[in-house]
Length: 296
Image (cartoon, rainbow, N blue to C red; front, side, top):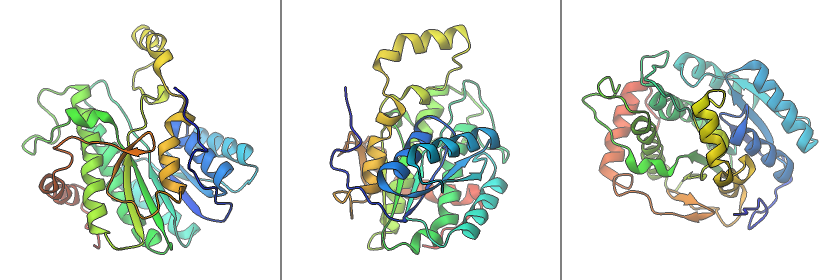
């Protein structure tokens, strides 16, 4: 399968500002590089590791020739770190045109964030929920801002048990991951509804099976075996970023909001993911969990 980054995508060689989370490697780094190189954007790369993050910034600058990409240190497993990163961004830029919530983790065993939440839900959803809310004032200053949430077809196996949100009983890695991807879609749907009629659009993507997104340790026998077995079926990071890039830059995507995309086209999400009532309930829970109330 071949996907291109040029099909139906309008280059915008200007000074638009983009923020990409999880940008130290893989699909996040590829996305940042393509936004800078092919679409003329100044990109802020969000990463938790200084060394890896700076290497990614250097890569983006080398690929684009712009030399203006910047690193923002942020651990999405820490609400304090997220608040500090949002303040850092507010001090560096006066608006944001594109926010791509790309960062994601898979934990083979149950782990918790700094604030006590199951790590996959905490990083993949709650961290982005808080960060996006804190960056909303900057997004509102753009003439036409776009938020892209990286979800997954794994959302179809997701369930939310409000009696045990921490998954302290019967933790299963893929159930937890699927729940976090379902959370991404509920967040996208509810936020798009709340921002309807504004200058901000919100959409989600299923990037496909990207090699760097598989959460197993390739240094272990099992991890090495899985990657060797599945490598022929994986997309490259650049291929995986295609739909997110399309939604962030294409004139065809202008004004489109509240949609779940795969391969540049709207795709069918699960009935649970499309539930307005479930999305609203989960939004309230997310505000309570983060201690942050969106000004919408």
